[in-house]
Image 1 (cartoon, helix red, strand yellow):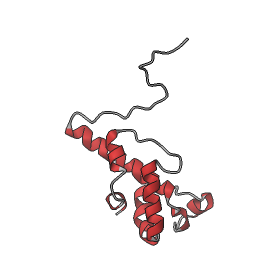
Image 2 (tube, rainbow, N blue to C red; image 1 turned 90 degrees about the vertical axis):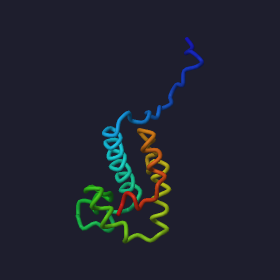
Image 3 (tube, one colour; image 1 turned 180 degrees about the horizontal axis):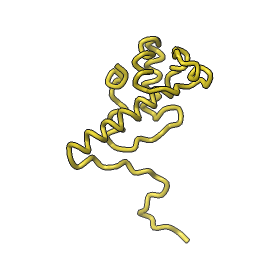
Image 4 (tube, rainbow, N blue to C red; image 1 turned 120 degrees about the vertical axis):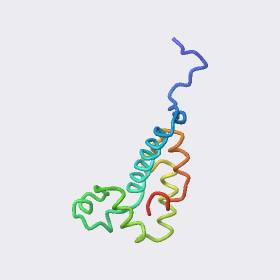
Length: 115
């Protein structure tokens, strides 16, 4: 049995823009949290972390905001640029953006998220 031809199967839809300002602020905050987590996955923050748990597991297991503030400046510009490109593509696991706002925010420079 065939599906109707106008149906987009297997594609994820990007949600529409929020309807009011309060929802837009909430959506922006959620997008920032997601982008910070993507930066934690894209950067080897565990190498500069003081927590033994992060170093043993070879991944950032702490709070994304504190780890990025502390570790971002310790990496050379080439590693920072590579992480920025990686986040634009969705991190190491290629996670698609959940909303149109998050899709736009991923293209902004990392200074909006890490400093």
